[in-house]
Length: 302
Image (cartoon, rainbow, N blue to C red; front, top):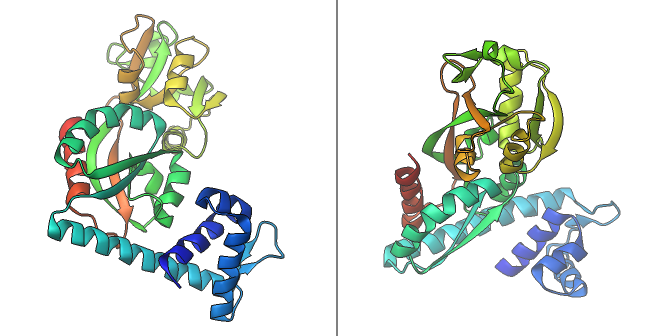
């Protein structure tokens, strides 16, 4: 048993399909099947139940995967610890975040980081919060930068605060009547949003989780007109006047919030915020480059 075999079997377990796993691993399907059979023969048990569709783990396979994840985590921790001890700052740092957040944060963050750590190869993965959660759990990414909403109730991760961010309502000028507002039109009365048409992200995104909780707290039932995978798309649709949207304040900085026909409202008398954090797996070693990236993000975006 070696690290290659562990990674190969983890990939099959993740995708539940040998052919798809072989394509991602850039090996032939027969070669991957042979690796699995060799491991099963060595252990004397079946790891995968091939009678199901998609293939699934046997009980022994579940135990194998649990141990494989621990072994690979310890190997990665050792590699990073030696990197920090020797000050030989090379290797990779895999960061997961949403597409919009990557577009906003990375151009401001990475130039200074690369100036300090030119030998670290950074890989950026952009997906929904739900898919990134699974990528972090499986060890396919090292750090996850997202609002805390996505991780509520999940104790598999450690985290550090980067900055607090306001959530705002976006509407075309004149869409929101004066009596819907508090404090000279700077803030909305939440209950007035009942029945209003909204552009929203799909359920697997952190902002949708936030919006659903916000609506429930104020007994609001919005009409979801369209759903998207991008806050910028929601912003652009709200600019048409066909509905409104709730997005992070950062999106307004990316979307031309100076447009005369757009109004930005706080979500209550006091600004409503969430905490953007860096997350990593419990037990994972967070070394000098990782800490420095988090520190830089806090300095730049606070």
